[in-house]
Length: 95
Image (cartoon, rainbow, N blue to C red; front, side):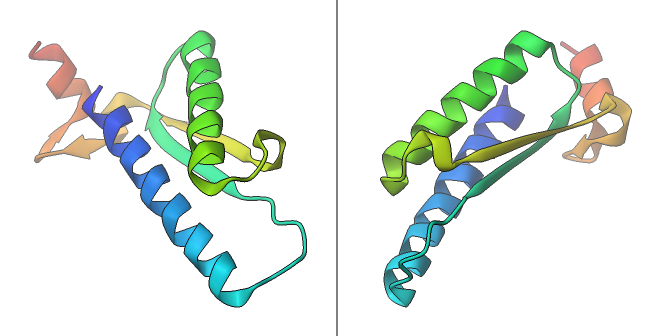
């Protein structure tokens, strides 16, 4: 859950940066923002929820239509992700 929250915070910060960049350069062409989330393996239903929620929030923050956004979910085995000096697999097994 902390990993998902961290990813959401990064998406919001990226969206704010992106919006500032667009307004500063005053570009008029259509822009297709991309959201990428890297995480441990999860169910298809959770990925669907992530894609829907990330798109909705990014559209709300940037003012761009939801149809403009591309969302990529990169999944990694839990033993290939580390946080606080431990793998996600170790962290999950301690709960």
